[in-house]
Length: 483
Image 1: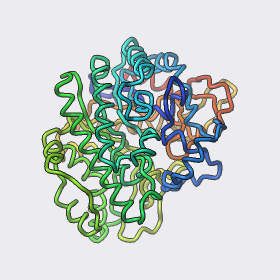
Image 2: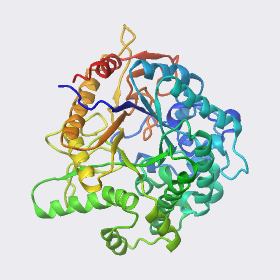
Image 3: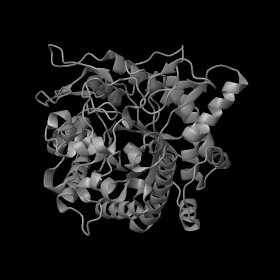
Image 4: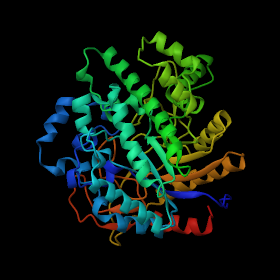
């Protein structure tokens, strides 16, 4: 089978906190991502790993200087080795690199009068290196790394003052990089705001009197991000016509566990509030009617203004991007739970799963692409998709990762089928082109990349890069487009 679409963007995705390291270089502040330690006793199948740490836990980490226990402070040292890594991406045949920019490198405290020139220069150098190597950049403005000073002083995204700080940050970088970056995503997986509020919003349960107050604060933070994103779209129109702004959603497609209408409705209701709601607001510019019933019945309260809703209405995204890793099943009473990092769902007997319990479903990607295209009629981009596996180098300094080749090829086949179905899909960035520190578990041993990075979970190792078997497979696929 040959992949048919010619003008397609193929690449990989990473985030600043998972690759850069250099956590305190040239004035940078700590982010919430860099303050979570590695836990050797973690439950790999837990969906609650991101919600376990309290503000007190985070604050203890500030004075802990043992970097080896805080993997994201070291990452894979992309800060110093980005030229080497980008050259490898080019060698693999990639023509786009999705990455994020650390807010804490540009405005370390969030409220400085002027940006940090060292941070501005670093990212300019990275973007120019991408351009030199023939790669477009898709830039995520905030990817799970709210600067800790913002959470400390302002309480994170539940505070509307943070909107102004973010808009200032976004305006600076759009003006600086408008000629180097075409594709922009204001927030990574924006729905994580309500699924893992500390990760997505920088807010902490212990800052609120009750669970209900915390829940409402997460929805307030989400609304503030919707508004901030719309303001960024509004501002971009006056900065450069080259800037194309989309969204990024953690797309958790689910199926009813059976044909019982009770479970079919339960699945639809789940999809409405865990998927469609986010797309609906960002594409259509309003809160859908089903969400208003949900808010009322669940006593969810947050503050909006007519002015904010007008901005959201008039400044919609131009394309949709989403992460796709797994599917699960939904029933009125969950019986046999599958693993996941954000949402608990049921096992599907027709699917295999990874060690982390993530169920592998290539056909589900075709279903998702068709569904989103039919619903929204906007160009689609798969901004994250991949498989995490524990791997070690063999005697030939490579990894024979045939399972990754199978995973990628099966998903590529389904993208191809969706394009034949008439779906407008314009690109794909795998998670990840190179091994990174895991978001939810802080492991290096959970490896996603085509490129092996020689660090273990305590960052023992050389940090050197080695091509896996999948690297050569992908390189050949890009040349031949044969699946």
